[in-house]
Image (cartoon, rainbow, N blue to C red):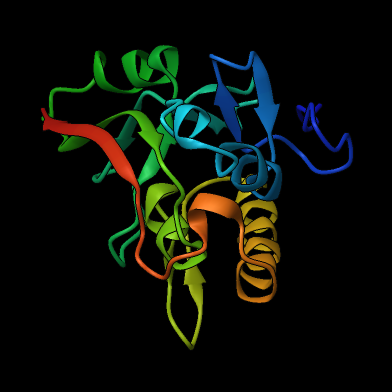
Length: 164
């Protein structure tokens, strides 16, 4: 069962904010974390839709789609997939992000590639939900300025590293 956003109680949670002890959909994340400079610095982790909705720990480029997407995995799934294989996979450690991501920046954080013709991802059922949330956030960002997020440049800091 999907984690429901602790703020609106209608959309599924897409990120976890440890400082707020909350699972949030993307629209609520933007609303809450654009209120002031203090909450804007809260690190949020991406939720991985493995059924347990744990924080994503790694994005595997080799398990990703053929058009360059990545597959998000929690720590346990990463260990299960990569300890048993003799091949070295290129992986991206995904720790957290801060700031106010613009809607057009979000697909890359989830390992989605969006172009005018199609969307590709190896993420499971959650990828359509995330895309829907990104579109909702884009409508909100273009119609109503959100506090600190009202400028057009992205203020996102993504904390991640490549490793093998």
